[in-house]
Image (cartoon, rainbow, N blue to C red; front, top):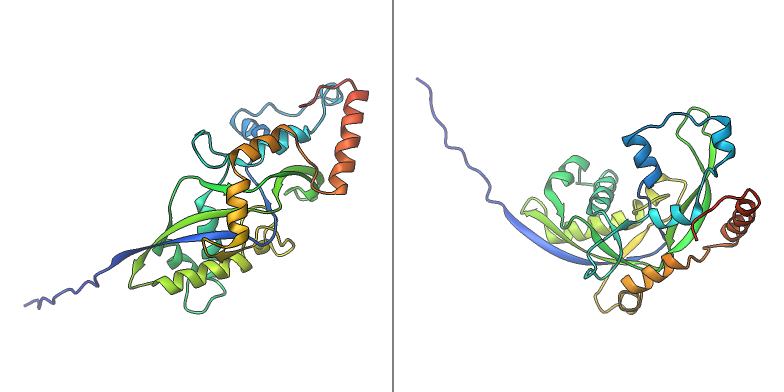
Amino acid sequence: MIKSEAVTILEVNKGSMEFCILGVSPLICNRMSEKAMRELLAPRGRKTTAEKAASMKHDPIQEFRDSPYQIIDESAPTLIGILPTSFKGAMRTAALDVPGAKKAQIGRLVYVHGEMLPVWGVPNLFMAITRSADINRTPDVRTRAIIPEWACRIRIDFLKPIINEQSVANLLAAAGFQSGVGDWRQEKGSGNYGSFKLVSEDDPDFVRITSTMGRKEQIAAFENPVAHDKETSDLLSWYGTEAQRRGMKVAA
């Protein structure tokens, strides 16, 4: 005779919290370029020597404009957006080093709302030497948008009582320091960009950024790019001169 046993299932409730995020270090936008996506969709093969000579490898201004995720809804408070999975990924990474939390478990218990989160802040044009993923680690120059001062709002749902409000806040705060978001972030070890902290809604810097660095200011920044540092300014100036010398047309 099979003895039946009652199954008791723990009652779970959904908790929800909203956080104000303030950047501690500049955010480097890391959306894959249009050129790279098109090449993946319909590869054209290797260029001939004549084709290489007749074109410039990079178009810094266009690459700058293509590097951030953009919110096409004109009623949105910002043009620049960030994937909510960036913050969830940061929390999952932070769970590796925080006692009592597990990366896979946090991924199941935490949900960051939205398809694209607005990011406030005025972008600059940033050029830097990077290494390709090939076996030779070939150097290249990559142009991206960098946001020196930035802010964001996020809403996180979580399952209670498996995880509580304080645990979520602690994990997100740890993620801001240990992981960060965007390119060349703290998580990667060599960089320290994209770090953030949690602030109150009336924090002076948060209020200033969200009230003066929105969609209109971002559109103006993309129309009239400003170099982030001297190295970028020098490279951009040389590129413009060299493109004209070769008779190439580049983005205005």
